[in-house]
Length: 498
Image 1: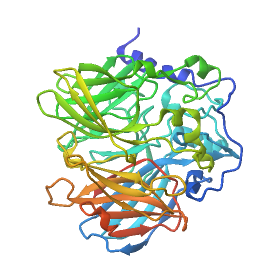
Image 2: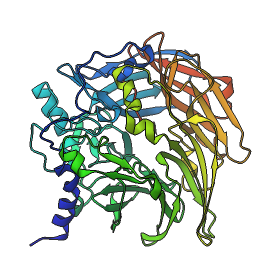
Image 3: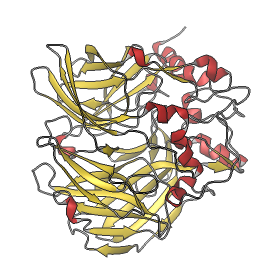
Image 4: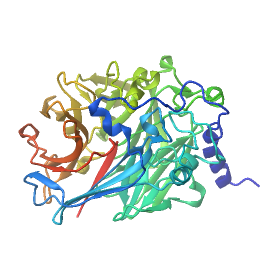
């Protein structure tokens, strides 16, 4: 007899069932040598799949005495096996870093997440399983999404437990000190193997919200501050082939659902997931608003089609008006292969549009108002004390001026009230990653804190961590911690105070 649990698990496995093509067509593994663009060398990945540890790191400048803790980061760390490379940046095996910063000096460790996929491929010395953007013929049985889970996108610390996240499958628990892999997280027996996205949202009281999307269904999670599942709900609705992020207010969850359809026939014929995605611009984006009180759908509105990877924040005024910000992505760059050239060490022929958008949702009037800004940014962040609440500042890495090469070369703060931007532009031989706002102990004012982030010095071929006074970005970094090596460029992180 089919139970609700078995039905959920069968539904979650449906997308994986199509990931075992008999042959690869057009977007399989790459055999050409890695290119020579110097700013792209960290995208080569670590070829040996080995971990790293560096202690007694060199400090340049003066580190704030009150800033003590661990900066965790995650991203694709292994892109090549047996002379064959993945075609897409999103495919690499997860590499979690821990930057220890403060009282005991400065150290760095990086450890690959020992997912079942990683362990099997390390032992075999070759790629065995399909990937998101690379059509790899399956050499092992595929039963569920966690068979191809790379745990490579973000990290989350909840209730003292550390997780590596990947939006297509379960969270993977790690030891917060050693980074050793402990295993897959199951929030409830009936949710075993359910997707758990890489962009959970934590409210100032410690509650955490997340989602997973699969097979025409959307699952919503509410997790308490101690790390236990408080509520969940499964919504039966059409969801896009890729849904990466969402945003919360005090009363609502908000999703922008892009018109991305997965062509299952193309996947079965040998295309990768990305290669089988079809953009249907005429359908536009659906704006989905869910009421946090009972997890019911409050509204669905339409807006022009846009690819959205990341949000900054959102808030509602209690009268049904929601304001939020997000970053517009370039769908053509994502689907036509230009985005992928960087993971082969080749600069793309052009850089796609990626910039802030400000959206106002008036639920009583069923009206949307959109403001477009001209800056080139990604990975937006806000002060964690204002998540889901009214806010003023958004922080992000940015591309400013006509810097040569690829990547972001500046950090910026966007003032939503004044429309003004404050930024610091690094020398042209620097590539900047995500920047996190860390509040100063005892402070209350939004933005009163430090901006903490990582980057890559192209000339030195070394990675580093910088800290800024978040209220004086233009003055430059207060201090820089240097690694004796480069680390593969990654995606997202989290800071945990000591």
